[in-house]
Image (tube, one colour):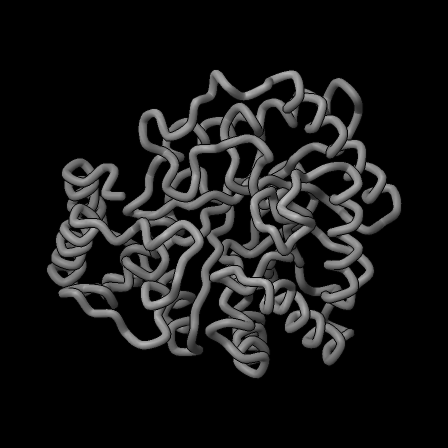
Length: 350
């Protein structure tokens, strides 16, 4: 597997990143260990987690995913230097995480120290802000009028950004973080952090991870353009749209222990009639060309112009093998054209 430079950092990351959010909910510690070992054997060196995980988020599983990874590191101390490890501080809204409060300079340091303890490591290669303090058009809030941007206090946002950057800078100087990144943010958020970093000689955000898949394309072109032109790594999460693009929910199916059988904080917002129509259309394309829907959907994201590293997740080793196998699938021009025709029919299915 190829590696690629992570934005303006000096980190070389695999073009596929191992996501971990199901570990501690849908996956046991033993299964998490199996996934890590298999991914490393396949050339993946990039693992992404978050203090929030496992998902769906709830108080009893908060931080459990990081604990699982920390136990793996404790069992494999010689391999820590070979992995690029990323985690995230949760944004506001979850009452069991710092009373649901905003990200501040103080909470950055508190959350980071807690993550390092759970992960049983002295440093993180990448530390990310899971979502902004301000209202943002993610998690199905991208429809017109979902967010009233005129009500956002811009000056307060800038002050918070600067406070957060100063705290991250302290952590970098202490050797606890190598680089900083964003998650679930927008062109304004990216550019504001970059502007402040340049003015005050503070850490530059080197990456952003947002949802991006054949059912959710809102980051193209504006977020991806912002990333490419500012040398910020763009990392799609949920390239299978929460598993929907595996085809597992076709014809009304709800497999046991699947995501759509669980209560979701934001509801099962991908489950719409348009989504199901689009999935059937993509399934038809995949079948026509002799591909599985899962691998075709993943390969499309892996090969998308502007994508640095794609974050995948699996609830079984077999799923992980198929997901990683899709990295080696080259989609023909004919397949890409057929996919484009479906995109134009269903540009915003959910």
